[in-house]
Image (cartoon, rainbow, N blue to C red; front, side):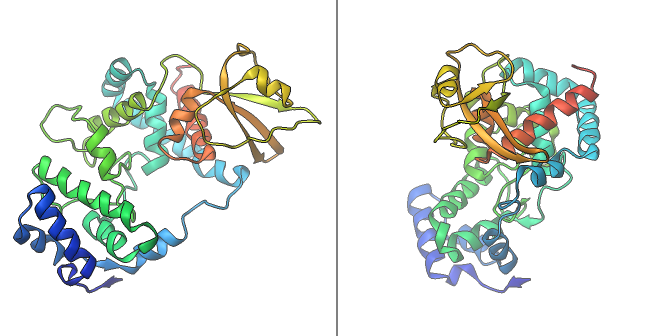
Length: 311
């Protein structure tokens, strides 16, 4: 339910409006016209206080994304957008199946993109959620800037409770840095134009270090005397296969001993699973820092690719 609130009267919003006028050249009148229509939403505050899937194990998390219906829908999305995916793969070097899987995990291929007005979500969190208000104030600033740059009314766009937008759930700052007008129509429409969403996801991955043609992850085996102290750390790969071997973790399939990887332990359906993540795995975690998220994206991508007959 909305909490009726004229954000032009909110003390923190007043400061923000003054900053947007002096820093970015907006007029006070246009800012007031938007913020007097923005609504504080308790549902947003409730949702951000209990993020989904935060406490799930891998055996609980994996089936959410590796269900047959999501694989089938991924194949359908790929077939419907095959030309754009092929062009994105050629231009950015990111495999089509990875792009499709990201969109599948994020929004079920555009089916669930969020129904909150973005200005409501970002205003609520910027001005009435102190734990992360600096982050969301910055995102609100970026949102108003992108609306101006794209020549659209900031009251028009919808997104998630956190203000993430479109097929790929880009935050406003990510949109401004990495979203691309892949369709060439003059508007970077990640809400209704799959081509723009596809190009934007591919560009994001390229800019975050995707290495074309290199593997993503390799299953590993832990010795009984395994003594790895840095498991499950989301950091750029720095330890080599040989260094992990010295700690008691070995790849099941061959990798050059100098390959730099990160290592993870998941609680799977049949007990502990161990995996090495290479640079491309780390790149997926730039989209979402959870190693389970990255693994779900990768495994979904491979299931879709298999059903497409590409493996």
